Length: 379
Ligand SMILES: [Zn+2]
Image 1 (cartoon, rainbow, N blue to C red):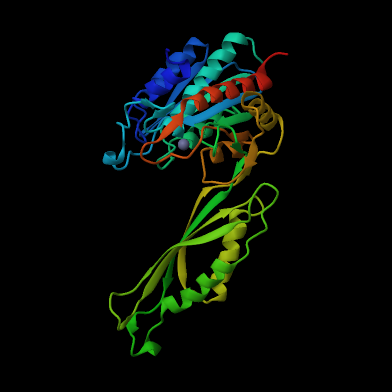
Image 2: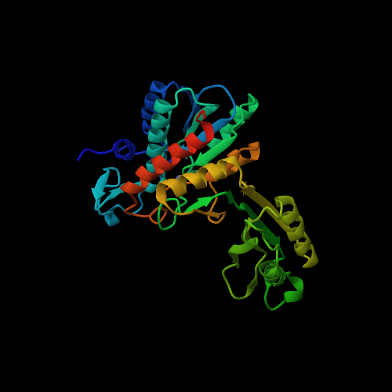
């Protein structure tokens, strides 16, 4: 039996060593396929990152598949049963770094688009692919820069499917219709170093920090809402000490991170936290890293098209979720686009022996194609 087109393309992508931020020629292969279908392809190279914006048609609404060609490093090579850059089929699964995150999805995008355009060349609106080689790294020169470029020329995505591996047990069982925000604080609490035997001459930053941390860890931030669980804060690091039991340290540092719902904003959270620090009399410096605003896509054209497609292809209903980490959806949603993440099962992502069920990426291509039909085919 010969390989299906999805499998052939997935193997081609997996054999390219595109460890972040390398693209290793993946996008050139994608460009060749899309140009044959009448897409206008713009390669946008920013510093070390290669991005692709490919669009077919000029009319609205604009539908976009978003994804990345880069993969995380392989980790301990000795723990892999197969060469991570030699795509290998084992018992119905395709093994290789990036199989599930997310070269399998990109193969499914391409097959869905080819099948759709071949049957509906005169579709409504436009179809685009936004592909980056830096989603797994510092993501400074990837999707966010492409979105900046599109915004500058007022090119707006209406509907976007991000191919991140959203599924848990079987393909399409979960789609992500939003993501929590992520806010990190790095704090240096200042004290006065001194001899432990003369504490009145010192100012112990740990003693001030401890009750503030206790309060932070017990604070009830919000109730969440119908789509989001309650906001949570985790202390992720505490350091202090001068290296001896007879010294009161001069400073203490700590770090915390919040995953927050659409009930809060980063500014509200910052105010509440600095109020707590003030209450405990901390003398401190803080730096904030706001790595993602929360976003939510409520039921509408895009979600309806996707949930119907999953039901038709898989025969079961999907579940909406906003759990998990951040994705490049956070850069696309603030432009006003409806954004949903739908991809294969995520059980092996970022692990050794990453793999994807071959029938899953074939079904995924059918789901993506049907979503296009639901949204853009002329009736
Ligand atoms: Zn990914």
